[in-house]
Image 1 (tube, rainbow, N blue to C red):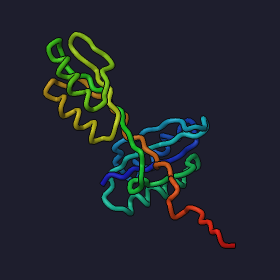
Image 2 (image 1 turned 120 degrees about the horizontal axis):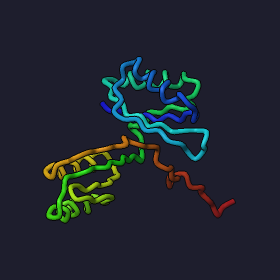
Image 3 (image 1 turned 90 degrees about the horizontal axis):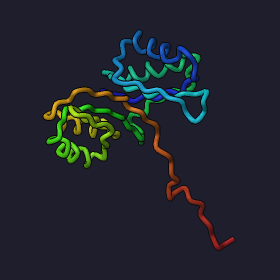
Image 4 (image 1 turned 60 degrees about the vertical axis):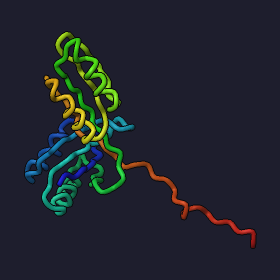
Length: 173
């Protein structure tokens, strides 16, 4: 089963290498890993998608990552309310006759055509993995020349106060 693990780490040279080293030593299969700076230039956020067979393995992974000096916080966010997106660039064979057809396929996915040449068209799409896979499936008959994907980037959704958390007032003293 796929698990989404986030880690906030110090933005220093070698951190990514140490994190992936821990994963490879434990023989975890990394489906995707994305890393980027946060609102603080000294801290980066990693989103790691791993394939595991048992829940214990994810627990072991988070404990091992927490032991690293450069790692500030690790969390398995798979079963929580998250915002997750992926970016894909898809280059498809095209000619003057098929460009309009491809444009019609791309539009409902809110994807955009970012480059056009005589023999190909490049499409940019963002969204969840299922959306990207669906677009790729629709574009396959035209001939996919090249695909580049970022992998999943995710974090927890913002929290909102529940109605039960509202302060109650009484007219009686």
